[in-house]
Length: 443
Image (tube, rainbow, N blue to C red):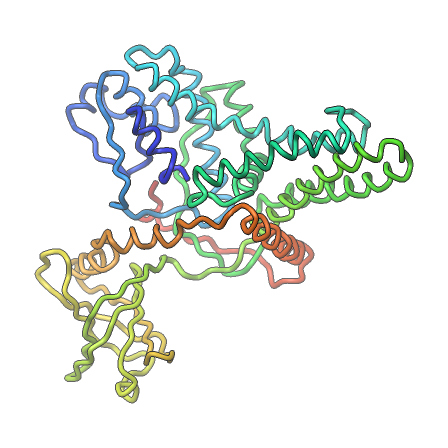
């Protein structure tokens, strides 16, 4: 959503800012600002703000030219988002874009919007507790009948959903924003409040990347989500009690109860978010379709690469080659690199042998023996930008409001059950062993 829609909009007004290492900056520009800005813990956006205020122009290139790592665990995800939220609040406090000298009006509005977005935990928190205030304490947040609700509020919601889907349905499906904001609100709300109270308190912490978990488990940050789910479940019980005890207010109670059930569905889906599945894969795979040759001893076998990662590759070979291809066998992978490299072969070891309807499948692990082999892997995984563009295009399709809503409710039902099974120990859970080498802990 950010890179597909928001950055393009910011770029129209010359207000797009770089995020982490996915940028190229002129040395002359950085010399003018004495290097990267460091008042806030979001030095990238802050530096872009300083450069824009000095008349420098930014250009957003809507094409994948870099591949990086994102947080693998929920705790790392929340840590990263907390840093972003606190850093943008610091920019709002120390730089205050509306009064920043040198910015055009459009840039002031864009930076103000980018900063104030991180205030969403306040509205999301109000949306969460408002129906409970009525169901538990009879505090009326609004006064309306069921007919008035369907005539005005429900109609507004439907128009809002249709407009959102029309504008960016290929980038964000219905209800996903609600889930995305809810799972962050629980921890971002105190984080934002703390930086508002003390803007100099936050410190920069590198987000852990390339983590693995030996066993499925509930995240160490997951307990509040189960508590909130339980409270919302009590709200459903309170709805039934109030309808029975106060039938003359059933209209308003049912509307508020429906609101609470909607929150319950989102909260239930969040239980699946904080219930993390075991994963031992330390690198992500990319689909490719690239001819190659597998060489073992004196035998040369024509093959096709199907997917690759920085750790290994999977390739198709003819079924006739099966007798000699066994697990543990060593060979060499030969292919034509995109770059001008001195070598065109890569040592591999067969780790898995399987079959599909097209032939024999080999799972191979790279055996790095010299620095040129790392260049070969980089060429194999990252050098072809078209495969990353195809990856993005395959994800960008409009599911529609009705189908998207049904899909989300089905996912929420499943994730609620999965989360509760993790919490009550019905799944195999336990402690995890995060693995985050310093060399891969990059932003």
